Image (cartoon, rainbow, N blue to C red; front, side, top):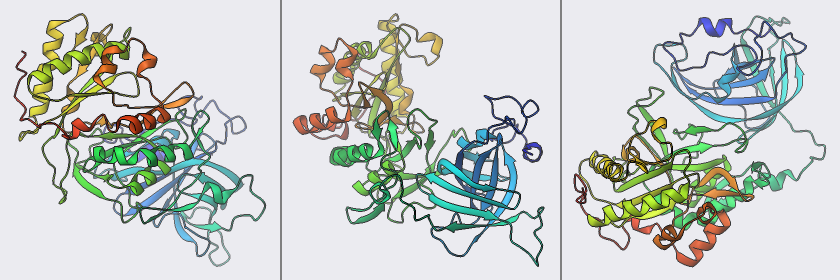
Length: 490
């Protein structure tokens, strides 16, 4: 019988960010109301990389309103052969399918936990001593059997030490060309295995199209990512399914992939540091796209070749439309931001967020990491004073109605903003949307939302015609001035 009592007894909700659900999950009836016959078996699974006292991988299957779990010290086997230890642990609530973060030291399972893979599974057999399943994930696919070892002719059903073994795949003809969907490719001298390329990540848009877009825009995108620790937003089952933000590169990332460990002050999960991916080559971009990373979020600072954090080199204003306004209203405010920044010798460049709003960025030079936030806040408050009915510099949602929120706080070194040319988890006119650099002529002329909505095909055509319209944010072709403490226009 599914039971969360052991899970709950081992954890204190006041001390751990882990979820505390009920049998059946938050959307269903409680375990007391559901019978075994009407409780759905479920078909989701998750593999979580767990840096506790020792690194291991938690494999969890949705079953009868809970997650049935095994801790696998060496991870699931890559190929058929000798079985590996899999320790059967207590049932977990369904909310754990999406959990990632830092479990405080001293608590049960203390350490960082990230989602390594997730997907769907098919059950071949499920008994008290054997579980045979076929997994369909982003990183792991295939047939696996978890089973209790037979010790001296006895099979002790209370024993928690199970084994897991990968089985050979059935030789029956697959419903699709498996080799075409999981090819091994060489990118910039790096060998990569792509997977599930026909999986739909946007309506009628498969993963193959996402990989193709990022590969084709890479030459223009990579300079904006170089040296910047990335926060990744992954959508393993597409934009209509739950997503999660990933900061840690993961223990099974390729050895050649660059990562850097930097402090994460103010982390909502209590983490002191995280091991971020740094994208500086095409192969890394393709690797991430294959993991269904759709959105790339960057800080306004970089690390140097020795992984040392540098002062911010970019100033950003995130223009967020409140209820009753649109991206066209953001364009009007962007023009005013431009005037203020230009008066201080800055060369601002605009882009759509690819979602609802816009961003305006400029290359800067500062020694004090807090200088960009101080200056940006002063600009936002100046605009709010001048036109209080159109602009607010206050984050509270109830203050934004009918106004554009000039979000200056994105300059905080602990925050990130969507990168130029990044896909967004939105679709318009049958295609994904993209955070797209603009000309100031386009900003001034914009009168309809559709004029500021761009697809991957649109962006690639624009790059072909205009090159990198966001190059000034990199300091290319402009003077990178020292940023004053406050705008001269104030």
